[in-house]
Every structure is written in structure tokens, then in C-alpha cells.
Length: 138
Image 1 (cartoon, rainbow, N blue to C red):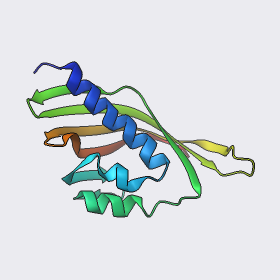
Image 2: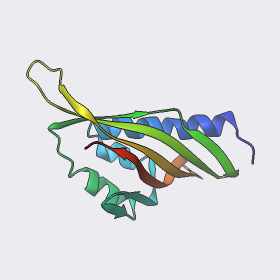
Image 3: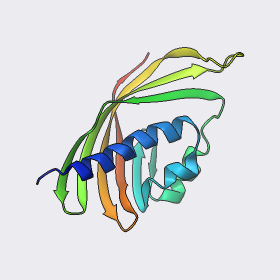
Image 4: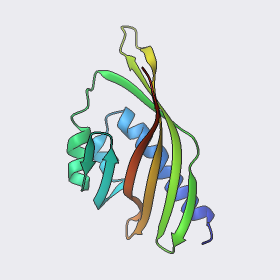
């Protein structure tokens, strides 16, 4: 199928927003990036709704600093209301320090997001996200 600039921009925005919102512990807003019946898979967890995703993310340690560094995604439209995407990412962790700048403890993983995007009445949303580890520290 063809790729429209509008679809690419909307889906790429979702991927970028996910990284920022998860790293800043803004989980209710993060949930809005997904369809109500979304599926989210990562090592150790499979979640089957937006509510489950928000509850799961809300358990993350707020003292831990993280950054999800994402490459621009590859987005391919598979129909008028669906697209798939792959995004490479590096996951960095750190420790909070007095003075505001954290101490980087390392790049702990390289992974890929394998996404299914769906156009809804509210706009494009992530319907499925599978986090696929490629390399792990240690």
C-alpha cells in the first residue's frame, strides 16, 4: 500500500510521545496513545487493554531515570485505517543525583518496537506494540 505523509507523521508522533511520556512518568497521557483494547507485549508482561497498560506502567520506580532513544520509525500503510511500524530504540538508565543532573548507569538494552497503528475517531492510535529485545547489557 502507499504511504501518506499524514499517516507517517501521526504514527511517528505516537512513537516519540510514548518515549517522552514513559520517561517522565506521565502514564495517564501515555494511555491515550493507545486504543482501549490495545495489546502491549514486552519481556515479562502481556497486557490486553489501555487500563492494564496504565496500571502496569504506574508501577515503575519513579526514582529511576530512564530515556528511550528512538530512531525514526519505518511506517507502512496496510489499509486506509491501519499501518505497521518498526522503530529501533536504545534504553538508557540512570540514578538521580543532587543538583539535578543524573548519573548514567548505562545503555541496558537495544530493542525494536513492532507496532500496529489504527485510525480511530480520535485519530491514529497504537493498537498493538511488541517490544523485541535485540541486545541486553550484561
